[in-house]
Length: 502
Image (cartoon, rainbow, N blue to C red; front, side, top):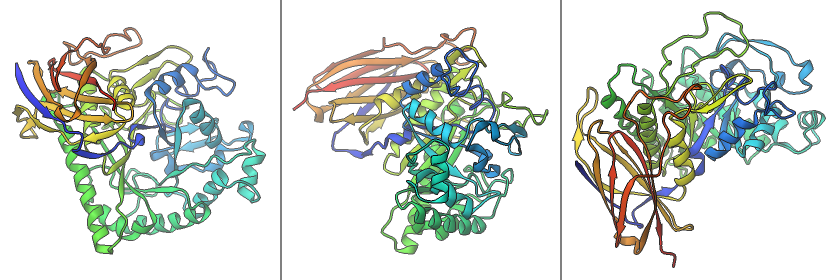
C-alpha cells in the first residue's frame, strides 16, 4: 500500500474561502435553459415554467452565484429582447450556436429563478455587438430603484424592487476568433474600461470582471492579460480565467495530472496581475474569477449542423468516474488558491457539460461530477489551511513529479470542523494517509465519504442513475490528534472531523 502524510496546523492559513468559488453557469446554449431549468410541460413545473426537481438538485449543491446569460451567447444578445410581456418578445437568430432564441426566459425570469434556487446572479453584458450604452442601460434597468426611464420600465414589467445584481462580467472571451465581435487586447481593454466607468457611475456598488484569456492555450495568453489590465486596472475588480480539460486521448494518469496545469495557470495570471499592480504603483490587489472550468469532452466539436433549431441538445457530455476524480482535483486546486480565486463557475450547471441531466418533460439524474462539487460546496467552507504533504509521485506523458495524493484541508472554526478533501490518483493501489492534527487538540471522527468505482468509465445515465454513488464507509481512525485513513485506488475522499470547542 502507498504511504502518504499531511501535517495540518490551524495557524498555517491560506485564506478564508469565498463561497462564490462554488458558483456555476447557465448560458442560453443547448438545453441549459429550455428543457433544463425551464420546462413548462414538466409535472413539477411551477407557474413560470421552472422545474422544481431541477431546483431541488441545484439547491442541494448550495451554489451561491450563477453566471448568466453567457458565454458566447452574450456577445450577440440584445437584453431588451428578454424583458416585457413574453408574448411580445422577438425570436432571433442566435449566431453563437446557430439556433433560434425564443426569449421566453430573460433577465427578470432568471432573477426569479435565482431566488427560487437560493443563488445570486453574475450578470454578463454584451461587448461584442453592443457596448457602453446597452451596458449602462441594463445596470439602470436591473439595479436603479425608480424614477428613470429604464428603472420605471422594469417596474412596468412587474418588478417594483430592483434586482441589485452585484457582480457583472464585461463581455465574454473577447480574445477568441469564434466570438462575435472579437477584439485585440487593446481594443477590448479600451471598451471594457469605458464601459466599466459608465456602469459604476450608474451603480457604484457593483463589482466588475474583465475578460482574461479564453484559455492558457491561446497564443495571445499573458500579453492579453497584461495589455487589458494596463487599460482597465483601476476600474475592474476581477480578471477572468477559463479552462477546460478532457481525457479524449484516453490517458488517465495524464488526465488526472491536468490539475497541475490549472495550478500553474492560476499562478501565472496572479503574477501578471501583480506585475501590473507594481507597474501602476496601485494599492489594489486584483482578484481572480475562474468563471468557466470543467471537463469538456466535446469541446472540439462544432455547432449543430442543422441550423436554427430551438434548444437542441448540445454538448451533453456523459461523465465517468475518472471525470469525477478530475473535477475533485480541480476543486482542490481552486481551494489551494483561495487567497486569489474569489469566484469560480463550474460550466455549466444543467444538461450542457453539466453535473445535472434532465429529459424534456421527464426524468432527472445526477452525473458522477455532481458529487465532488456537492461535497466541496457543502463541507469546504471556512479557512483553507496550507498543508505540508508528502506522497509518492509519478511521471505521465505531459507531466512530471505528479503526487498520487491530491489534497487540501479546510477548517471551519465557528462550527468546530476540519474537512480533508483527497484524491488518490493511483489506479491500482490503495494509499495509507497519515494526518498530524497536533495543533487542534482533541479531535473526533465524523465520517469518511468515498466516491469510487472499479470501472473508470462507469457513468450515471437515465437508465442507470445510481451506477456511481458516494458512500460513507471509508476507513479512518482518529487517536490523540493523529488520523489514519485508507484512500482506495482511484477515489475521491471527504474526511470530516470535529474539534473540541473552547
